[in-house]
Length: 352
Image 1 (cartoon, rainbow, N blue to C red):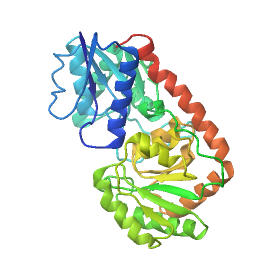
Image 2: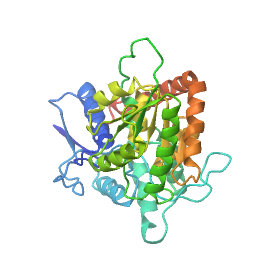
Image 3: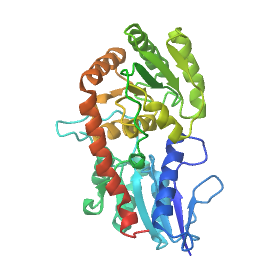
């Protein structure tokens, strides 16, 4: 029996990371016979630095193209294990300045104490049987690090594999906005979550005055306190719902399908919105958020949390969604289908 280790940030009840593992597991169940394959997740207690017991190591979805996880996969390569990079992405806290071509204007390769990671990454990609990264900025990170790009593609995030929920019943157009709020402990563009929260609250108050209802929800346990604060700032209980339940992704998709749009802090809340076919505004707090917007051809709907006029920008994008909702939905649908085929490729071609 072949043993496959899926490496991700698992066991911490974060809906996005857990979701990507579940999607990988479900594809394994569809393509790989149970009697021949044993698929294990890297939950706490699993020694990911010891690839010995496994035939295949998969660097899965999430921001894993960083030194520690790169070294885990590199060590698996050195032990002659089959290695796949499956929708992994790069992340950093510095805001990336983009040129006219859509590429970051500075070199993204590691320097100083992490410089040796570049050579490890190049060997890792060259030796992998499949290398698909989350978005164009993650792809540029590989390129700047000296990777032979013939071995890499932009596969999209595994969340693009989510099947959309059943369409809502026809009726009056939705006037509800889903709002995901939370915390990254101020490790965000601008470095000030309180300021972002104030600007978001002001924008939501204006949207309420225009007839919208607001549903506030978290996607990670530590997000709950931030959601409570935002709810208290709005002070309009007839128009605002606070839901602190951490839903299974299928249940959250069902809720999202009834929204007119979503405004999301955490990245995978925006991925879930896209999976539900619902236009989104991403409060881009890290490099990975911009990578997502570019990957789905909707970068204008990712707003930096360092934006001094963030509240105004939110209202502007809501206006754009009101006018262009159907075009946005078509764009999302086309991009999802493209990435679904790429993410399923290693399963179809028997690469595991």
